[in-house]
Amino acid sequence: MYPVKNTKDHTVAIVAIEAMICDSQLHEVITSILKIYQNFTGLINDNERDTLTGLLNRKTFDYKINKILVQMQEEAKLKNDEANKAYFLAIFDIDHFKRVNDEFGHLIGDEVLLLFSQLMTQTFRSRDQIFRFGGEEFVGVFECSSHDDIPNVLNRFREKVGGFDFPQVGKVTVSAGYTQIFAYDLPSQLIDHSDLALYFAKNNGRNRVSFYEQLIADGALQENKKEGDIELF
Image 1 (cartoon, rainbow, N blue to C red):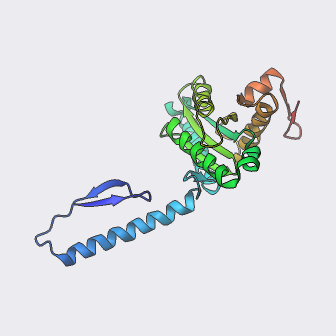
Image 2: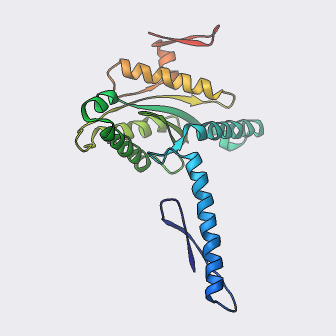
Image 3: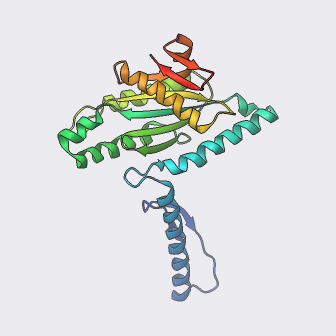
């Protein structure tokens, strides 16, 4: 019985070998093959994930979001029941993070980012895809069975961050902006929409979650359909 481990040295599977003769040579061959496999998966992980937090990186986001859009397009064409599910993209930004770096130094700032990312993995569901875009900015892609689910999911995380005591720093808050993903959206549009909702949250008190489509409906944001740009008021 041979354990198969991931990049964090956690056993994720067991390989059972049945052989007429089990000698040291066979053992060496098997362990060598498993080491090659683990090195290969480690290289893939390094290419897909952020070095500091271990979350998926921005490069991987492009592949993942396009895969979701293609899936949504296929489901819409086939009128699949899965097409009834709603997908959302959210951008998270740690409030006043520059102040953390300025007052406590970048080493403590990195610790805040690491703990923040751990809170994300602890709070969000296993099917949610979380990315670090750089600095204090993170992106999440969420699949929900109902439109009512997503604000609950995002606010639960916002509250968890607000209630967490970061060593040496104390309390930290997070703002988020999100938008619904439609089958024929462009990834750049989704990022722009979520960014604008995030800016609205930042400019209106921070420590809050804003929904792009709701802001448009309420007139808080105005969509310039002719140019494809958005004006923030």
